Amino acid sequence: MPLRPLVLLPNPLLKTVSVPVAQIDDEVRRLATDMLETMYDALGIGLAAIQIGIARRMIVLDVSREEDKREPRVLINPEIVWQSEERRVYEEGCLSIPDYSEDVERPDMVRVRYLTLDGQVEELEADGLLSTCLQHEIDHLNGILFIDHLSRLKRDRVMTKFTKAARRKGTA
Ligand code: GNR
Ligand code: NI
Image (cartoon, rainbow, N blue to C red; front, side, top):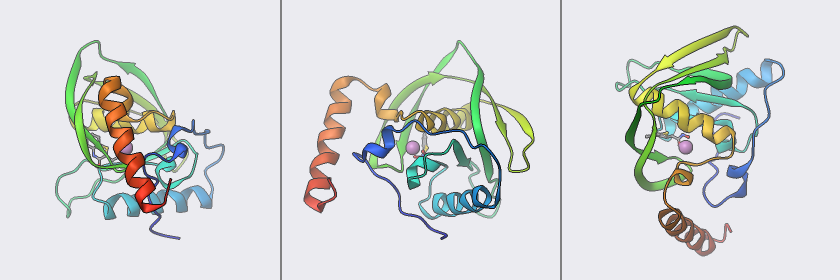
């Protein structure tokens, strides 16, 4: 089961709080491979498992620019253990909210603790795009989308647009 269809707004699955991965088995390894493949195919820089309908606390990311120098990362049960006071604005998009982007303010830097596919505890300190992406993906694990960080007016406009589009397509 390699490429998996993306869950799109306004699918209520995106509001799910995902559950921790209890053990890293073949199923989890297969899921990681499928998530990476789905992310690359969609030209994304990150993906949370809930975006393919699996409510497990797992994310994949690759913020490298060139296609021939891929840096795939798989983070299991990731948590932010530190964030900078300093904040920064970055224009975000989301594979679950196609063709929409908006500025989001978040902590500039974060330190994230997680398990690798080998079950090792690791930490990663990030700034720039990687920091933004980590925060965006960890939000997904808690049922939070980047539009939840926008004004009510902007969020409502996006919700209305996607709900109408889904109704036309018969998917909501
Ligand atoms: O592909 C993605 N690009 C992106 C750009 C700016 C800020 C965050 C992101 S994450 C997004 C992929 C996605 O939706 N991950 O959940
Ligand atoms: Ni997203």
